[in-house]
Length: 176
Image (cartoon, rainbow, N blue to C red; front, side, top):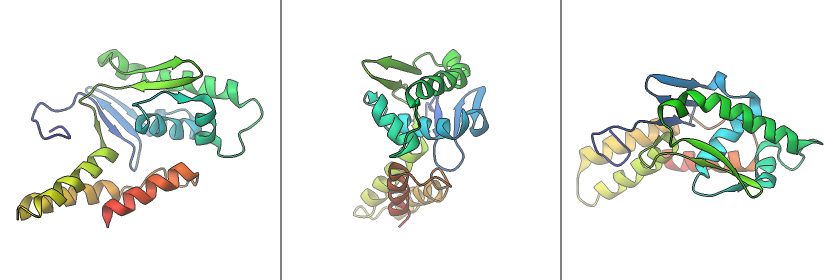
């Protein structure tokens, strides 16, 4: 089932809550396949910001906070290259997936029917709230459970950068 309730099923499923994963049957990219700690920060950031190009400076802050290392620019380029390599098995199956460079930044392109657990949690909460005025208790409970279970996985445990803390608060709000 897609995040919008059709029965076609998404061709691409992305988990950024709990353990990172990308599923494009029969391929799965697991958290251990992402390049280092910064790669595990870069991927969810790009997923959540995929509707726009993200500048290199913004990515440096997302990866290293207020104190990027000397020579962060080549490090970022190398990290993006390693992330592209990790995505290659998925790109082979779903060519709409791309991590492209543009004027001073990067943009992640994903198919429109992608399933992203973080967004599914938010959508589940929306569906649960919409079901309450209609007295559809079964729907409200079912969707609230989906949102609660995804939110309970957490977000980038062990990291404490401001954007990560913001996403954690959003997940906690969904759980509440």
